[in-house]
Amino acid sequence: MNYRKIIMMTLLMTTALSLGACSTVQPSATGAPTPQHETTKPPITTPVPSTPAASNEAVTEIQEILNLAKEGKIANCEFPLEKGMFDDLEQAWGKPDTNEFAGKAMYATYKTKNIVVGYNKGVQIIDLRSDSSDIRKLTLEDILQALGETKDIRSNEGETIYVYPAGKDYELKFIVPKPTKQAPNPHVDHISVFYPRGAVNLMAG
Image 1: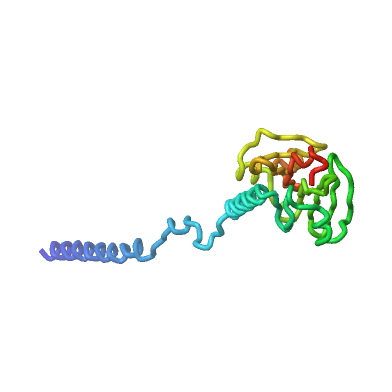
Image 2: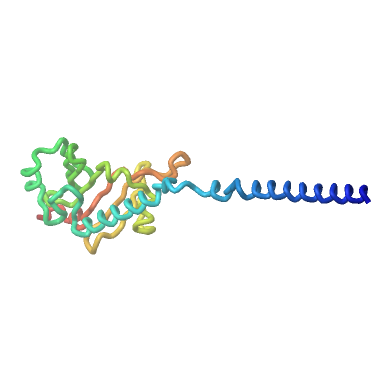
């Protein structure tokens, strides 16, 4: 009997120790959390890519350029196509840096303004060009995104000219270097707001 009691006591003690061990091991599985799913989340401060915002800004700028072109204007020039006269502009701006004949008009360059003014024999302004830094930031992709494809595409000595109607009488031209493998999305070289009828009627004004 004594042996049986000893055996029974031994079994009871072994069982108690086993239960105690389980109770001490159990919390270690939940007491030290390892939130692995949180480490895979991007940080809250992860910067948002700037490309879409820049593209939206470019699209807005191109729309503004087109709106001005419909009035025969470009930014930073108060003298419009057709109604504007070069002698009035010259009186306000002073003598141009250069004044040369090209195509069907005279072209006066004002370097500090990044503007070239084309005028006919009647000194009527028929072409306004700009190569400002804001213009040169624009890309071919920006133009196509803002205005869509155009059927009027011309070429000129390594450049492509994308022509869009600006109202009934004027044209908005984006002069862009031809795409290459190294530059598949070239930047705009300059823009031109043009009055075709003024170039035909050289004595207008």
